[in-house]
Image (tube, rainbow, N blue to C red):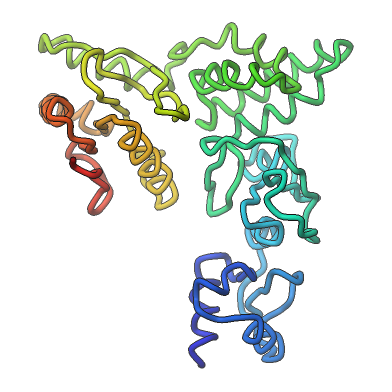
Length: 337
């Protein structure tokens, strides 16, 4: 196998057997090699911008990712397609819908319906099971916009309320995140704001066991040992808001997150978390990360992590301190200044 095709294979191995034209510069090849791939018979053309390895198995994931890559760079799974990919009932992938920032590129896409968004906040984009997508909450807001007219409001409250609760049960939405988004987006006058604000009212942050159990346990550990408490569920950021953190020190520039081993262990989860920690460091905060195993099995490790993180914050270090149960090999520790 020639060097150019080894590069194609390496990219395809990370992308469901696919390679997009915008991947070519990163592997040091060009359009000439794209044509050679087509001529070889070992690559199928899905669109002018996406090739598929002929030996790769066809799957829903491959079809959906091909649609995103075809509309990229910067495209994400959008609205009902994002909710279908997250396996929420009532949605399907029969017609894939993607979104990209307005003005990002003028190229036509052929594998999906493309929506051009006026704004897409960085923390409204995640990678879910290998596919760049809007968060469930951002996708639900898109659905809520369909009920913006006064005559459809009552129906929208019922349907979007059920959808929010279903996403919450699956761990895809938190009520704190809902309140944060209502506060941010309502200032921009986006469709669906009235319904989402109404639905946020009875869904207070920390009001369900899935959101509050670990955070309550952390608070109890500090109280039992007479250690100064943290403020709960605070919004942090520098010039641009980063979003809600589970806790913030009331004196020091220190943010604290409580991570679940269930939801923060995959490579994509880790990458998203570490980008967030870097953003907090860049905004002037140190970060402490308490893992739920330590909360319930090793509270002494929780206390030690809090003391260490506070010491670093007091010294002005922009660092990340994990409790011992962190499952990541060589976790990002921040730029110690």
